[in-house]
Length: 395
Image 1: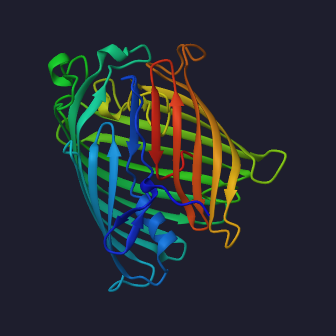
Image 2 (image 1 turned 45 degrees about the vertical axis):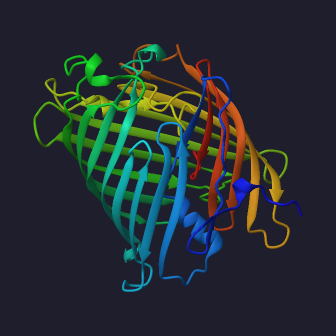
């Protein structure tokens, strides 16, 4: 049995081992790290390393990112005084670049019959969020950055009515505060004004929406056959003014096909998003525009690289098993080859079949019998190469 590397043996107190893959960027300044520290790290680590009867826990974790810097996080949950199955959790994180994310969340998985409830409230700060302009032809040389603060909450009620069909409804309130960036690029507020880029003055938005899903996948975390169809619609309206008001329609079509042998899977997802004004005198703030780039879409481009009114994105992955735990089948790892093709539009009906952006790459996906653990990928585009670590699947 080979010894684990130092990066695989970071010990966190109390008594929890955090396996933290570590990447070092190349010598070229074109190579950047993309790291999205997801809350899913905590339940995945708990499922792997602790028993199911634990009622109270405090988990410290760490993160490293090209944009966020070195970060630390404390996660706490308490089920001791709640009805069995319900969960109260708190999270607080802070990074060397002064990114912050704090939230409190309460979940009732089984409220009445098949219905569930999820309520959370929080405060999030990104000190150097990138903005390249609006449109599919925006230039990387026009990179600016801004400080984005979000304060708000969300209430979601949903139901899994059958094995194949589920629905949910949600109400959100978010106060967006935009300030000058603290990154190495010029501040977005110094280069643009609110007439050319709506939303630079910030806005408080109330949104109401719902979604339905038809799910025939054989597994939620690592499906090998079946498909998923999700349709969502949400209406946004400004609370502290009357400039912003729009409707968003999102459609995701995913399909999974086993090729040749069990475990070899071709996974494909098509995503479309359309945003329409509620009236001629209202518009969409730039921070709510359809966007592509980062670890969850066009992986070979920077986060938020392209912003527009509408978008289309097609992603395809070929997943090939390279390791399985022979003793208890609790762990597995897949190799992945992928490509992403997409673009944003000022109008979905115009230029539908040209000027698409492409990224491609390879990586690994680690999972356990309890669910998905992490994915590590190298993604390439005509602009840059990104190293990605994320604790939830892309689809």
